Image (cartoon, rainbow, N blue to C red; front, side, top):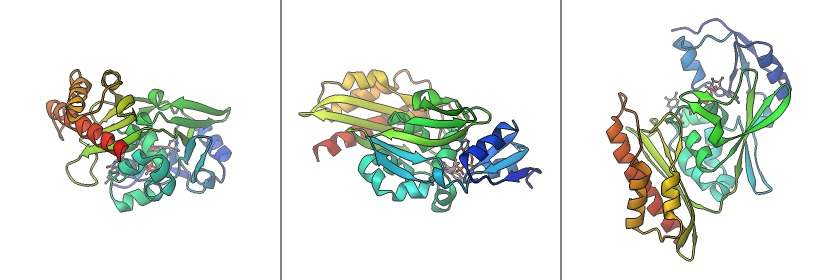
Length: 285
Ligand SMILES: Cc1cc2nc3c(=O)[nH]c(=O)nc-3n(C[C@H](O)[C@H](O)[C@H](O)COP(=O)(O)OP(=O)(O)OC[C@H]3O[C@@H](n4cnc5c(N)ncnc54)[C@H](O)[C@@H]3O)c2cc1C
């Protein structure tokens, strides 16, 4: 189908972009267009105006300082994949972004667009949840910060309000060792199930654990009971299996045309076990 008619604006600054968005409730930001343009073509959204963010150079950088990696909202998946800073400081992001779509889509698609769209089967929502990142959101009144744990409100729903722009994501540099696991039907497809595990070990014992599941609910889920279970233990294959069982025993996943709820729950257990085992090996390397 053809796009519906819409106005088009190409602001040169964040301030100008936010003014445009605030002046029209039906205006929408355009980032890489990899999701928004197909949605327009299907007439699932009919914005009055597209506010193109592609000239906002201030949203395109990756900076490291004060224990934080700050990633601009317009940084593309391809830039994140190529980033040496991420390989050093955010290995989980480097590992997960490999699974985002295909090269052509990664070249245009942005981390900000992915988070604002909030597809529960997308990798970046899981990454920001696992790494306890902070979303930087700008509106006409100024800047506000939202923790990843409060950012996702369900399928395609976030804390970004009308007239607001996600400008950056701040990742605290973690001293956990990370592993990421995903099952998708084909390479580049959205995840059927994914899991991230982060372990901080002290003399072989787990001091802190983070387990996050994705594509099993309407938003990424932290498995806090399993995280607590691991503290003080040596993460052997048996302990990882027990943690995986705890992480998934009460999981009320959803079934859809891609996979049944039972499939998702079973595979989520396997993903958690594998991710924990790999993260534990990373630490001892
Ligand atoms: C064939 C195909 C396969 C894909 N596979 C995957 C996959 O496996 N995993 C995955 O994670 N993704 C996948 N994607 C989606 C891809 O990652 C997109 O890049 C991403 O979802 C949207 O990013 P974008 O920059 O293109 O955003 P756009 O399409 O431009 O925008 C998406 C939405 O976010 C809003 N928005 C954009 N930027 C901002 C901002 N800074 N502040 C506020 N709102 C904003 C827009 O208004 C729009 O509603 C796939 C896409 C396609 C077409």
